[in-house]
Image 1: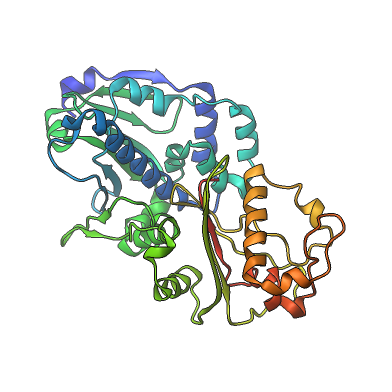
Image 2: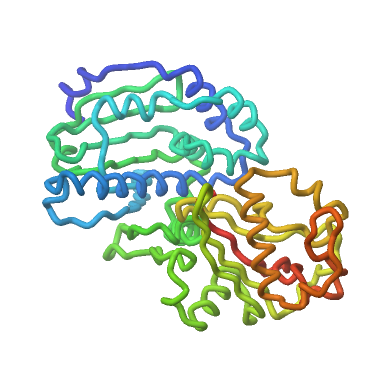
Length: 389
């Protein structure tokens, strides 16, 4: 930034709710700081999606022919980590609106729940304020953006205090950002591990592997390389997939060495739309008879990993199955019912079982009959449920 540009920088205060949120992030007690990168990648993916949508009516926005992509650039000398996309970008007012305010109802309730560290990782993603999670690892953040189809490039800067600065970018920055957004994190001393290539790859593999746009790692030495698969198996049609595709997906997702004993793959559309891919292992888990054991159903929203223990499937050892259904959202109830019905169809013997007088559905049997009832989808190497819930 030139001296003239720096002098013209305008300082603005954060919205009160943003200031409170930033205080939580800067003084964060969350152990899952990895989610900052998940959220920045998710935002970049949304920007690429929006560009593709707006380009339908205005093809000139992508006249350069450059396909949408996301780049991650670590710089150990400067102790910075950059997440760059060539998506829709933001104007000056959009930077102020998107990064300086939270325009959503229920903010107070969200902030009170966010103070509980155990819920933080999931709530941040669900509420759509993931950008601020970057302050868990960054002392200062610089956002440089050019709205597609415009000539102006703007720079937003904040250290997570009471406000932020916004100014027109220098000529050098304007040449570098031809379209889209560059987010540069000046990392805290205890967050330097995020400059390591293996850490970046691990987070992308765990959280953002299925993002539909290429994610490239740009090392300080060597050529950029794509580090995500950019393909969500559950979103593809069953007719496109082979048995081998499912086997490889099971081993990759579950980290298992056996083969799936049963696979359920379907898509539901209506009031709630979602896709489900469930695997039951052929190897009995070590904690099969533990009453406290939980399933490991992964939940993805718009291909982004949100939760590792989504309460979607019926509990194997539930003493009060109907009471269990009272918990969770209506979307989870729908997905849970659909999964139960699909599992029953996959197990023809279920129609001959005694019926529960309350629900009218086949009564669950003991753990010894795990491979003959719904419990087949509850082992440790658990099926994965995904979709827009």
